[in-house]
Amino acid sequence: MKRVLIVGCPGAGKSTAARTLSETTGLPVIHLDRDYWQPGWRMPDGDVWRATVNALAAEPRWIMDGNYSGTLAQRLARADTLIHLDYPTGLCLWRVLRRTTLGWGRVRVDTGPGCPERFDVEFLHFVMNYRRDQRARDMERMADFAGEVHRFTRPAELTAFIARYRISTTAKAADEFILAAARYEKIAAVEGIELTPAMKQRFRDATETGASPDEYRNAIIDAHRKP
Image (cartoon, rainbow, N blue to C red; front, side, top):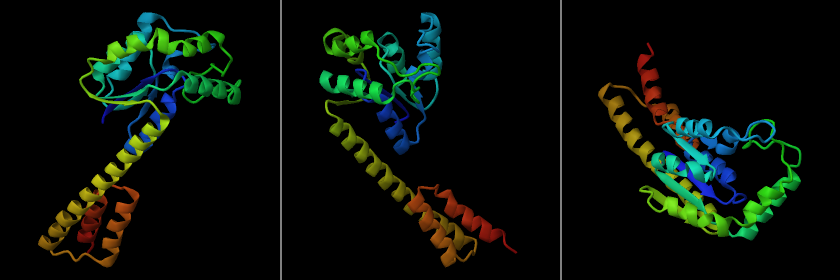
């Protein structure tokens, strides 16, 4: 995954999912709410907003959260992975109300500056009627997406997906370290460098912290340079 788009009804937890997945993948997060809303909850000019979305989507790597159906096609054209949080209305509405209550008057990390949390009747109405008024159109826009699609109807499914991806990523990294170790030990043997216990321990430490296998290579180079 290099460009991941997370969509769904407001209150589904798109921003939280983006940050959690970023911790696992290392991909940078783009919260569209932060780029859309101007101070005082003012909306940007339509042409300006489309240009902003194009610029953000043009980045080589990202996790981008936010529905904004009018620019969904632009973002889908760039994404390689789509995560759709297709949660029940009741859950989304409850999460919005909880977020509003707990964050009242404060600016969220995923919202633009000068946009404190507030009680917005029109927004709550949108959430309540999202599945009736908006979901079908969003599903139609997503239907032709050529990349990988993950659609979750319960938060537990998303949690399990991220856990599986984390395990898979960790296992892949371990395999890469094992191959790197064998490769660099061959280099050491050819160049007549003795791999000391301290150097081998440095490699083991690197595997546990997720550092680059180049850590081990650097240890060999350092030893080789010693007089």
